[in-house]
Image (cartoon, rainbow, N blue to C red; front, side, top):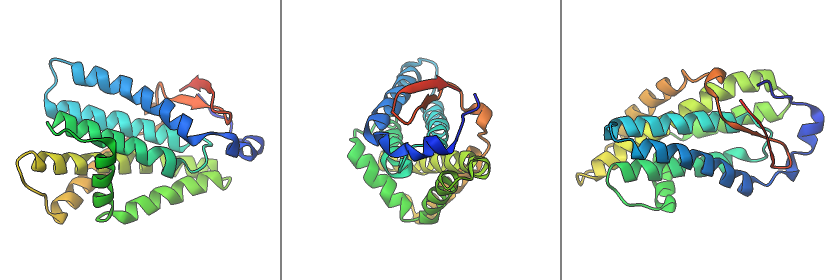
Length: 204
């Protein structure tokens, strides 16, 4: 689905309620996570990989929508929600707030990646949708995938009473980022497109 990005829509962006949109996207992701978690034939590694991929695709879809401050109010909380699910799969009970702290810990080691995420989204909102979209989808998907892999490494080690080294976390992040960058716009299926009033418009 081709989304129309015109000046009129951008002028109305501030009418969008980021918190309500976060809830909407989180609910969508929760339904996918439920199907993954209850699957009887998937290993823990396979479940984690599917959780990470689903989150990366959703974050990429959200990032190219005209939502103000999407990186702060939607993407990062969604990534924390992913972290909580990964922890659960690895046998660790943690709240989203705790998962957010883990992500901040990882961000301290790979902080430049998050700055790049904000830059790409900024390009999109500055009126460069072609360039911004081309950059944003693989970048945000790659960063989310990288975060997921680093978070998974962290919780896998925590489950055995160990804290991974900075080098191990960076390596996991980089490997995940490379994998996530393979995600393209054609992969953004069933992502709910929202109007600036926060209502569903269509799906990809």
